[in-house]
Image 1 (cartoon, helix red, strand yellow):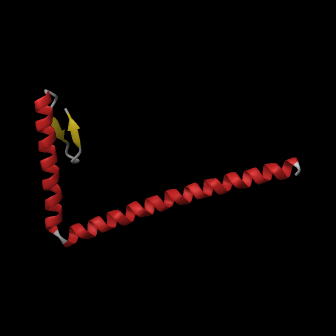
Image 2: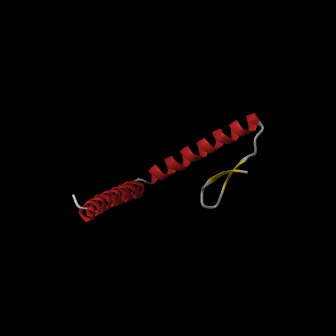
Image 3: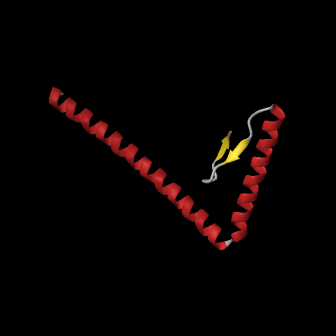
Length: 87
C-alpha cells in the first residue's frame, strides 16, 4: 500500500469516528429534549405533578438541613434559581 493511500485510509477512519461521535452526541441531545418535552407535557396535564416534585424537593432539603445540623455543618440555602447550595 502506498504511503498516500495509507494516510488517506487513516484520514477516512478518523473522519468516520468523528462523525459517529457527533451522531452519538446529537442522539443524546435529542433524547434529553424528548425527556424534557415529556416532563413538560406531564406537568401541564397535572398541576399536582409539579406540587409533588416541589414537595419532594422540600422534603429532601429538610433532610439535608437536619443532617448538616447533626454533623455541625453549614446550613443549606436554596437560591432564587432553585439551586441547593451549602452556605
